Image 1: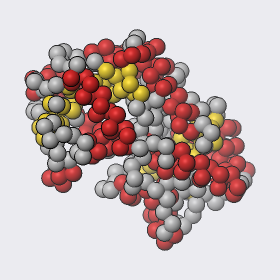
Image 2: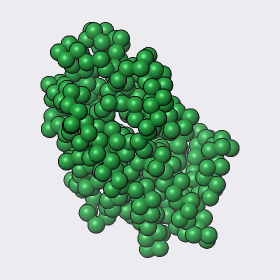
Image 3: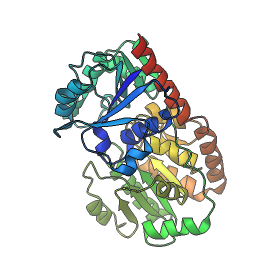
Image 4: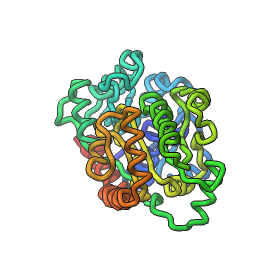
Length: 372
């Protein structure tokens, strides 16, 4: 099989889709047959260390560097000739590409009112819809995502494959108390407990609601906790202004989350008293399953893929209002028995997902399309 992977996003910060792509490459290295020819097309050269991690693949830089859409639609098709299948792991494919292809759609958040700005429907949604129609197969990470792709993009059910994601084996409970204390001192300016959010900051993920709920808890329960936000502020949430207005400036900490090694993120999860993801809408969240695999109590929303993964295993909210978020955090932080139950539930649920299975099933879809 001659496999190509559209890797334009691999030059960006390794969050969500980048990590999804890298995990697939990592596990595919041991699954590809000797006769398979696999190429990752990128717009920036990889460092030697990064290239060494994926030595089974040919990494081909396609120049010149253009905007993502122009690079993928104008340059990539010329370099991706003679493939058996082209894989678009990040929502899109080159729309004029004539060969067989598979695209991965991770979420269709525009169906949820208020989740995304109005212009998303006129731009990204159109590209995603056209890519789904262009593809021979569409890979999604949850049944709810499949339903949304069918309804929103008009794609037949038999064209869609549901393949859940997972947390890598590096994410696990840590019992080294000195390491956990050092993590707290590093990120929240002292050995104090904290509430954790990991992901891109935005109104879709209800960061202003979380800050307001946290402020209410500080006032009503006098909790000693800090709030640690890990991830780029893509939505330009006015963190400093909100924290100042809510009188919690001394307890809110933010880091953009550029880590040299995921092991640092593992200790951040483990040092938290609770992980919270109060999104308006979300696909299968890597940060949710990673927190669970570390045995952290989880609070999230009973919507779409978040509900599929967390319902019955985490404390799930029907509506992520200030009142509901504050109540849920208060219940977890003040109830040791509930904490223990949620920790056990997190580990149980995370153990039901495997990157090896995810990679194997995705590769099987690519082989089917390549041989069709």
